[in-house]
Length: 259
Image 1: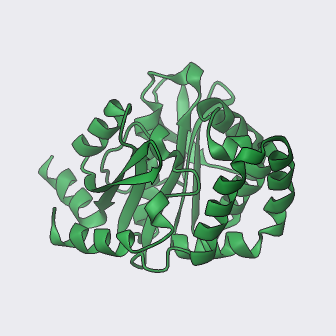
Image 2 (image 1 turned 90 degrees about the vertical axis):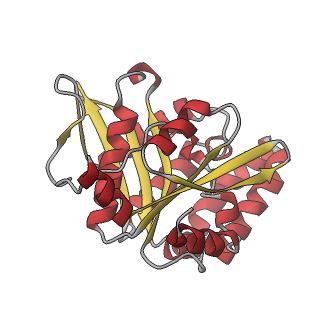
């Protein structure tokens, strides 16, 4: 592990937020990652010459993003909080000053998205300040699924403490998903390439994510082959081990030069 990764890993290890990744560590769906040179994301980028383009999301895309999330993460914690919660969460990222929400669109319909943010500590503070927007959907869920109460409390704790020890200009890839019907089309890889390009264009120095360590061999192999460095393996909760990955801007650029 290189010195820059060691330093980042130590600071992230001390952060109460990042010990659990994002709110739901939903980037385990981020199956395809690769370093890339900056690209002009202001213009739609072809994900497939025949079917899809990747572009910045707009407010009107939020229902489609929520639908894809629910299909891709049907048994995940955030999904159980309901569509209203998800709509407000992705809407907050979309309106966050350094939020990154990209969508892939083919034949007039959304078929994937990637979501994250530069300066995650500030984002989680913003989410905490807007907590009232999320309380009612969470309470409604708890009435029907009281066993989720501990998970909600853990999420609140992560937001309160925030990722203040993460180096400035870090970027979290918090969620990426491709609609099941678009599987096998390489959209996942395309979305991550576009996400990295946007992060670098916003002066991010690192992009990090967490993903399931077990039963997720394809994703982990692709992250490593794409230049991500595994910084640690940790137990998120009983029975669920996670891997943490980081890629830094300089090494991504060096990789492209070598290619």
